[in-house]
Length: 246
Image 1 (spheres, helix red, strand yellow):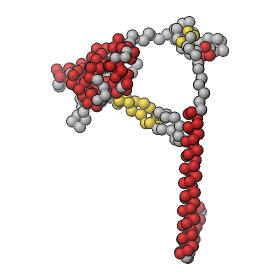
Image 2 (cartoon, rainbow, N blue to C red):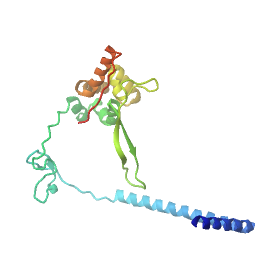
Image 3 (cartoon, helix red, strand yellow):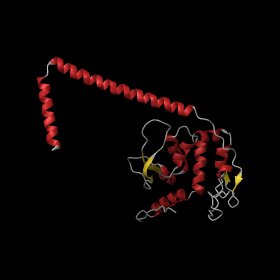
Image 4 (cartoon, rainbow, N blue to C red):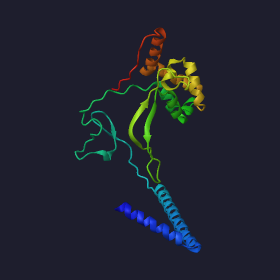
């Protein structure tokens, strides 16, 4: 029924337009163009208003000082702010009154401590380009469906769905250059040369030190190299490497 009414309405409109004069057609199109201009002007005005509101929201922010984290959990020595006390006057967001016990974190390697805290040329370069170093030495790339929120406002990195890691095969094919975990089967000097091709802001000396550190302490770096050596010594053997998530 609705489709029949729509067809009849469209037929009447076509008949009316066929009978209209040139002046009437000009007036109709002028009115339509004026309405379009008005809608666009309102949209621009709304956008400008939103930008002004966002600007005011960012500049008219009063400072809030939480003070120092001086409170300490009696069980795991986690630090708290005074206002984080619960209704029982306890700090329980860390270990739940000692009921949760986690193994201690490994000691930070001296090299990373120096690069993060010193003011040397190498340390400053590492601090300024820490993301490049991290990406260059990573074993896998991150995959996710990134969906930016609509409208204006502060930058927000929003992910829809699952986050996963893309792990490449042990050997690259002719179409792609070796990267990520594949570089750990190469000699250290060759691997770092390939990394620096894509990261010219990084220092060769820092990249070499970080590569040597990972080859020493990281089990994945050792696994890649061991798998490569196994295949080289037994080319006909059918093997695969599986990373188990704990």
